[in-house]
Image 1 (cartoon, rainbow over the protein chains, first blue to last red):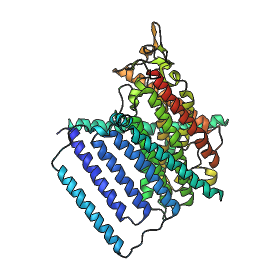
Image 2: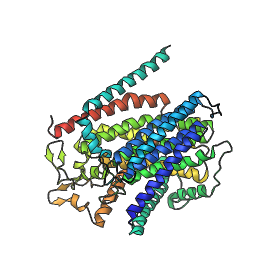
Image 3: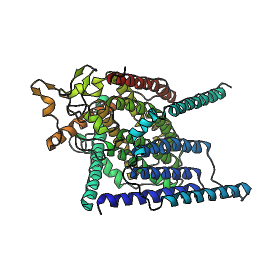
Image 4: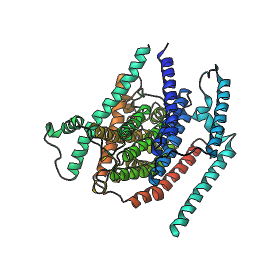
Length: 169
Length: 367
């Protein structure tokens, strides 16, 4: 076996285990800050898995957008709101419904994964590179791309107006 | 085969780490001497000739000291924070072209990777401040995060503007296209072909004069991202004792310190690569006096050494500029900090971004 293939396997297992550990940490930690940090660990591991598919652009954007921007915002809000540790709560109808939904989703995922079993992805994953994404955005998906920017602009203006209204009261 | 590739990776990591540690020793000494000269003092003089071994002695003392974890701190966060801070900066060096043939990972999206991985630093700062369970540390880290997140926007916009001008996200290609070894023709101000002249004329900042204000914005916002004066509000000794790392001592403090200087060097090297030709020589070919070809090259050991020396020279000059600024300007207020970023730097960088697009379009004949 070459160094590359050993390294690839080690790379995959390292990030797979780390990602699952992060996911378990997210739902078992009582302290919201620790839960958010576990989620960051999970996002990071997924970026590592993207890298092993040679989807470099996707991996970098995963870190930049999720681990960097969104999770820092989460942590900031949690810290500023000074949230308390989660208390043990009674089991109720809503929780039962959520449990059933989760179970259904899990079964669905298992079904999808089973259809991938035994198949291997050969070579590079073309969609994760920057050139094909750029090409697609500027040709086939130009209209949706521009629409997204309009929606984001509207959200930005909305946020400013809401903030302004409160400061003038 | 397995062992040799593995060992090569380890050697690269160890060499980079050793270099950063030695650089930090030198930079702290330089910082103290520069500040002393600016303030008309003599600075450290006791340990070694002209105090040259003062920082080595200081670091030795720091490493030997007991590292205290406060009783109220959250141990996991407190211990993990310096590691996250250092690793996120150290990982940025992986995509940095040090010479014409030396780059740890020739990643196709190198610049974006560096922007993304440096941003992770913020998480380390937040967990340091939160994990210390100290109000000064928390205030310091909240300030640091607010500052770094807002100054990341102009930095990223300016970086993308230079990427647009060179047409690649790979830092090695960006450096390559600013010298005599460029794979595409190099034009000065869109007119003269200077591919074989090289030197400082083919640097981005000379070829595209609109990148001069871009470099100024880049320099200011990287100062703020490194939490350096005049943007050292997160550490503000007079109000916050020393900010997010007030509870750290011993080797944990040394790691945070190392990360701070490693980040200074990293942003200066990125600045040198994006605007000042990276490892390319500043000397142009003048007729038969082919200075550019004598002082650079590819493939040979001498060429690599020339490249590394030019890049480090440019980086160190930018670092001295950072130090000069630190000991010259007073600290900004919080409102001045946000005003500068959101009302001046971001609109300025959007304008440069827009201009870059137009100039690029004109260059390729689209206008």
